[in-house]
Each structure stands twice: as C-alpha cells, then as structure tokens.
Image (cartoon, rainbow, N blue to C red):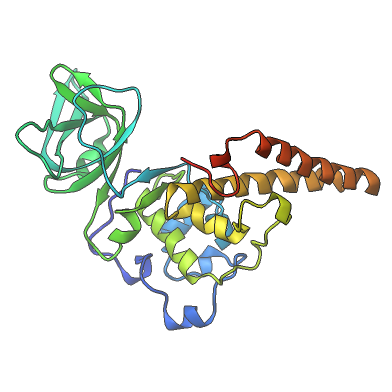
Length: 299
C-alpha cells in the first residue's frame, strides 16, 4: 500500500481524470492492449507486465487481495492487538535513529484527526527501509495498516503498509470509501494502480463484451451479473455488495471449470455433471443462514 505520487502529475498519468472526447466516442474493449492507452505511462506499463498484466481485461481481473474501510476510521488503540487495523492520522514528527553502525530505524509519529487531551499518538517504525524516509514528511495524512504493538509506553506499528492521502482531484477514488488493496510490485504502488482500474471502469463499454455472465439463473446471486460483479469487487458501495460480487466470481470460476471438465466427457455425463453442480449449490445454499442467501451476504 506504500504510495505517494509526485505533485507535478503530467497529463498522461492523470489516471482519474475524465476520458477525452475521443475515448468517449470509442469505448475501450477488454482485449485492448494497455500500451495503446496514452494516459498510462511507459514505466507503469512495464511494471504491469511484471504482474502478467498486458490488456484491459488483465487489469480488470487483477482483483484486490483485501479492502479497507476508509469511510470512517477507528480511534488510535491504547493497547496492542493481534488483529491488524486500518487507521488514519497526521504526521506530527519524524525521526531517524542509527544503531549498530549501518542499521537505521525511521519513525513517523501520527496524531488522529479528532485528537484530545487523552489521545495517544501512534508511532510507525520501519527498519532499514531508506526509501520510506523520502516518502513521509511532517504534515502529511497517512492511512496505515498493521498490528498495534506496545513498545515500552508507546503504541507502535512496525513495518505497516501505508499510503499518503493527497487532497487533489482524485481523493474520492482513494478516500472516504471502501478502498481496494491490490497485489502490487516495484514501481507500481496502490494509488496509481487503483486510479488506473477506476478510469478503465469509467471508460469501458457497459456492459463490456467479454464479461458475459456464465452462471445459469438458478445459480445467480440475486441480479448480480458477471460485469456488475467485476465492477463491485473493485469499488463496492457497501460490504454486502463486495461479498455478493466475490461469491459470484468464485462460483463462476468453479462453474467454468466444471464445464471444461464435463465437455471432455460423453453428452450424457456432461448433462449429469451440470445437474450435479446445480444440485450441490442448492444443497450448500439451503444449509447456510438466511442472511447469507440470495444476495444478502453479510460481512
């Protein structure tokens, strides 16, 4: 989640900006190469290739590994926990300490936005990660994700994932929403990756050809189609929508695999396999609590 972008963004890397009139007239196709998109810089295209992403479809099916609820943040903890938490605060102090010769510890002290006399600051620490020192400065707002630990009298996060929140035209993509966190790579942090996916979903034809729904109606989770599931898994409006999208996509993968296996068998066995797949899903659905059925999956 380590992410900070230059304040001097060029026009070609303004991923969250509206599409040009030309791109609106010619909607993107999912088989289109990312190299053909002028607004994705060449270094980002090369970084995406390291993740095996070369086309629009590859990027839209590069699903988040988790989501963070940035609609509201918990207060800074006062004791340690084994459960990772997502917090937001302003950097009020930074320091670099050396020990053992070449070893370094960089610390950033965060204060929550609605701090009071009883509020405890949060200390984030990174060991021997020199680039972090260049990315974090006093006065910035950070979103951090990690396990709070008690170190002496201080609550610390060691090597937390972090993202710098910038007040710009793209803030609505990264803040005050359920934000996706993706598998990333060197040279491609969360902020530009999330912005690229957001812009592609804005510019692509709806519903996009190539994202046809595979599931028969009897297996569908309410009115959730595959195209809707792809959009919702990236930027869900609420947690139930995220879970419904995930369920649809997982079941679609399973169903497609069953079709592939069954297609290599005689017709009679093929039909029996599909019927068995539907029956298995119905049995599983009947044993789940009512709050988990028919698109009412709870977080």
